[in-house]
Length: 158
Image (tube, rainbow, N blue to C red):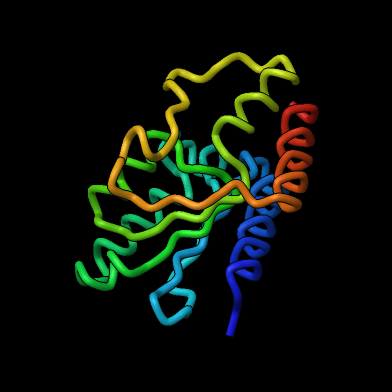
């Protein structure tokens, strides 16, 4: 059975796939209480021409259609980066359980600032500020440097 580290590594792989497709490097995996991978996705904002095409939104939408309330509440979303406020709100509204992320929003803000990237149109609030009832674990030491490298590569290519 896959471990939390395996799921987080898959998120980084999905983020790499997003980067290779020209999208920002984010990837997420939805895992049931018994450890089964239910769904996964990567960022598709550029590919789809939709600024809401974040993987966490896709997983929340999938869960809303395919899982009952108890299954959603017991599921875990593993993700390469902490949910943005939009994704955190969707996560809470759908009633998903725990979030485990590789890199925090604060780390991402720092990395982008170091690269001279202007802040986005939405304040980079932590998940707990948007969805205070959600259990959140992260960042994960070691893998966060891989995510940092993906974001650096994305920003220096554009």
